[in-house]
Image (tube, rainbow, N blue to C red; front, side):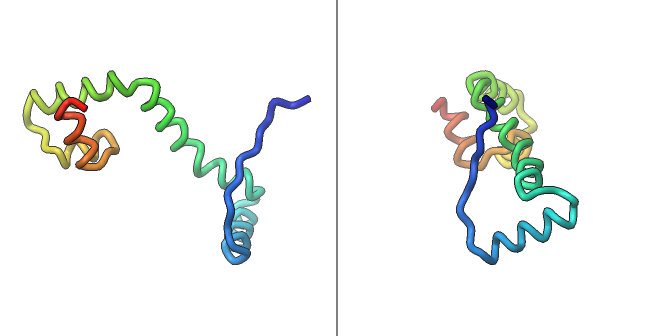
Length: 91
């Protein structure tokens, strides 16, 4: 028995045909095409979840040292301004 699992999402018939055409143009199955695009992002978010406290601490330290704006931190840590403000506030 395989430990492989499947994850899917709903899309319209038109969207499905678009995905199918793009995947075929890259000689990939739809599943492989979507996985290649999505998986790197999953790894980043998973790492961020595992190290959330460390990342928050680092953001606060970088900001306290100066020279970085909230916008800079947004770009550096891939977060929006509200998320950065909450982290700096201590939440």
